[in-house]
Amino acid sequence: MTLLAANILIVDDEQAIADLVEVYLKNENYHIFKFYNGKDALNCIENEKLDLAILDVMLPDVDGFSICQQIREKHNFPVIMLTAKEEEIDKITGLTLGADDYITKPFRPLELIARVKAQLRRFTKYNSAEPNQEEHLIAFSGLVLDMKTHECTLNEKKLSLTPTEFSILWVLCSNRGRVVSSEELFHEVWGDKYFSNSNNTVMVHIRHLREKMHDSAEHPKYIKTVWGIGYKIEK
Amino acid sequence: MTLLAANILIVDDEQAIADLVEVYLKNENYHIFKFYNGKDALNCIENEKLDLAILDVMLPDVDGFSICQQIREKHNFPVIMLTAKEEEIDKITGLTLGADDYITKPFRPLELIARVKAQLRRFTKYNSAEPNQEEHLIAFSGLVLDMKTHECTLNEKKLSLTPTEFSILWVLCSNRGRVVSSEELFHEVWGDKYFSNSNNTVMVHIRHLREKMHDSAEHPKYIKTVWGIGYKIEK
DNA sequence: ATCGATATTCAGAAAATCTTAAGATTTTCA
DNA sequence: TGAAAATCTTAAGATTTTCTGAATATCGAT
Image (cartoon, rainbow over all chains, first blue to last red; front, side):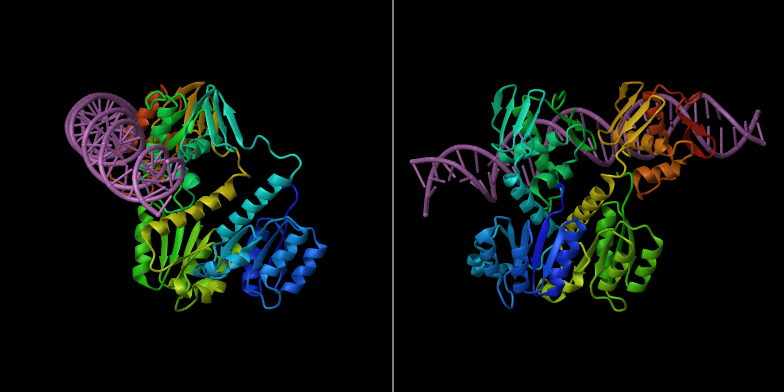
């Protein structure tokens, strides 16, 4: 994804947590600066070129909120706050001001990694001189999908798709030439929520898509059914 | 119907829980190794090729945390921890070190299955994307099988195979030069479901395959019958 | 020639998908 | 804020495709 590994700062006085985060992020090939207190962290912020910071809200010396503020005085990179239980978020909403995201403990490793990547992606996208201008565009054989505007046109004519429909079509298109199972589609579009036993929902949306694209289930030009496997769009 | 069923280890001293998990996952066609104590589990880890482990944190002999550590010494597959009540997670956050996810009891079956699948998906994605890009393709003497698109072509002409037919042909091709018995075929394609003593079902599919490939049983170019043993495709 | 293994055929069963529509939820807008 | 509109989800029945098992025919080794 990135040519050079991002530098990530992690501060938490619960050493187990900090160590845990370190393990997972190192595993993703990031370069980690880890501290168990605020002072050392501040020092690091001064001297290192960081790409992202993960701060525990509650620290014995300098709390995460203060650190975040000090980061914001000079830097623009994303900050993710680590907070205690879900229920307490309300009370500390103010504390997360200036942060870009927050994660509640206990957190799932996957969630952490996903959030980190999301923030890095967002940051590098807005800040890199030469962004992937085409990343948000898919176009082939008369079909154009624009992720930015969420618009879709087919042979110059605009299709008004619902968000879900757009997402499904996007996933199918970005996997063009490959069969995508209903289950996979569901996970890509709805996230890793639990899914209901029937994949009928996906099917209904596929139907709506075909309808709007003037496509048929029997002789589809675009979304083809692969029996027993899933759906695909030909390459 | 999966080509390879994942091997899943489940360890819990509460037999009811372990049994329950076993039932749900077997129902999803996974192959289950179930143990009620840590020692047997450790033994299994040594000797079996596992794809995922579900470990109860509290075990009478060796606790789940230790097992997880021992897994991590040699293996990289996902580990999901089973913990007691939600409220107690704080206390044991440290114990989930090295695990990829955790589930609190009591859990809902769908949630369990969703989590297991999510982990397997993540794992197989990270572990198969790079190294063997061509793994999804089998091609020789005019026959091409593409796992990605689930397409099969014979001398440039497309054969429209049913899911089962495709699977059977895939298994035969990936074992090219070796005789595969009907029973083996059955297990590879259908998983560990019942094996009806009459292997006629396999035979019928073989026939359909031969038909679609314009192959004959008497002088087969592709799928050859090895009397008393099974079928094979010449190398 | 005989016997067990493999082939063929085909119709009913099972499974997957499609369609439709109603109720639930979310979003929009006055 | 509350009502209307749009969207999503779920369920049930229809349809299509695929699978299976029984009956019968054929093959191959001895």
